[in-house]
Length: 390
Image (cartoon, rainbow, N blue to C red; front, side, top):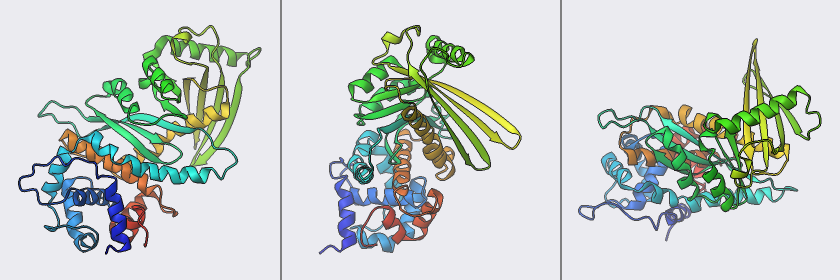
């Protein structure tokens, strides 16, 4: 009869029961489920590639033996590496969707206790793994486009491309794999495309796109309109304004947002599906005697509501501050030297999922400290995995 922990580990394996084993049946000794659990646990605990995963598994053999079958003992790092090189990244990610849904369900149920539930925000942005280039095979750094649930702090999906320029083609494919219904999808200027706007609207969501040079005429028109109206104090036009002051890390940020209907003078407005509003976000940062200023312009399908606009824009910045910063500093992703594209893609997804799990732990420790504690203490690792009886 299974004890509580064994039953819980088996429930984790339920998420992967439909995953096809890509390995040859010849000399296949280790169970697919055992290898997947080891991969997940080891990345949470500090491993950054197959070699480290195998070393972590050997160091924690006694604990793993209590919860996994391991018919031939601990698998070697070569066995783990071969599996990660063979697993189809999209199929692998799909198996995490129910697990992610179980995390977001708990957060959603908590939010129902509030008097009103704000519209969820999904931030989509790209990130390069800087040291993953492969000069021998003439491959540049691996570039990953990620979807991040701002409220829940979980990664919803990712897609790998060979070049940053391919982000435009990667975003529509990524959107087909996630549920955007009822959500505001925020995307940087690279994804500000008419077909992407249509896809989000058709999926039941709303969009907020940042504007830059790739939409030069539209960007300049929106910029000029706001500058002209600011010069007159918005005399004769209706614009909503919201301001916030954020302090921390020795810096004070004054955040000012303006949001309004798209005026008829903006060129090409009818070519964008359900384009309703536009906005500007101004961040003035004070650190000692140094003052910096950043201005970003946006087009939106949401109705006029400056606080909702501000919340979504601020939420998009979270994918940089919460996900990408954590990947670079805590998971040292930029230092990854994994050259095999499929392996790199799968390990990158495991890191994003690890962050999602680590953020769900209810304590006052940082993500970095939680990861260390998971590596030091298997019982804490069990807590991160959401296992009961710990």
